Image 1 (cartoon, helix red, strand yellow):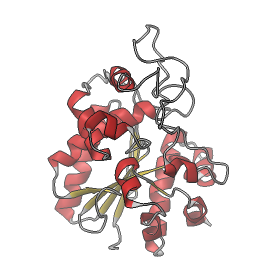
Image 2 (spheres, rainbow, N blue to C red):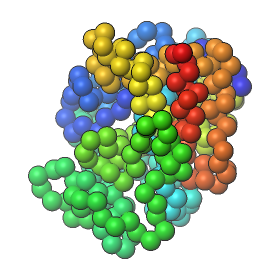
Image 3 (spheres, one colour):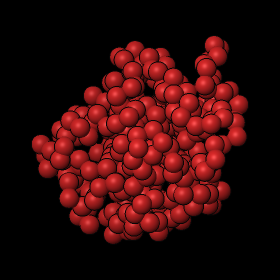
Length: 288
């Protein structure tokens, strides 16, 4: 696979108000630039500028996001009629309302998706004061045939790591809200830049100047701790560690190994995969 000249890692946020600092959006690149946009709208503008820069300067670029690009098998099919994660992104993009003040309706979308199944789930975790019909506050029983985790998250439970399922929207370590808002954003970003962006593993990663992929920002706890110990906000330390670590892997020829997971194509098409799932030891060797 052709090597990357620049890697960008994005720590996303589903905050309902503009926010900077801890638990907000951080974008770290291997050219040393770290930004902390206060809203998803501003982050989108930053990412578009990165993409345009990659095109203009002919810089092959990998952009890594920390939210799920797919859901456990069954959700996309039930929502869209197609067992395809990109179809789910489009479903979300058509319905997601997000403005320059970070006001978002992702909880209503989660409730709408819940309504496609019998029972109360699979999404849960309404952190608002007001009840939202169709969105339980506590973890419900999963609908028949729906798993708690994607296969990537199952194999990602290694070396003390514990990736969270997409179904949880609120609480410590929850990724569901980021995933719903993030997938909608990815659909729009890709639509704007066809055919110059590929989203892996749904498209080949070796044919476009810009590749988007999912990863897990907790893959490098040691390096993150070292950077946070030098005064970096933890979220920025995680993002910059991942960007720099993946570039190190690429420079020594190991990054392509992460693009070949042991999973069938049908599962990858529906659930996606995050770079480094089941290969945490290899990722962590970047800073040995």
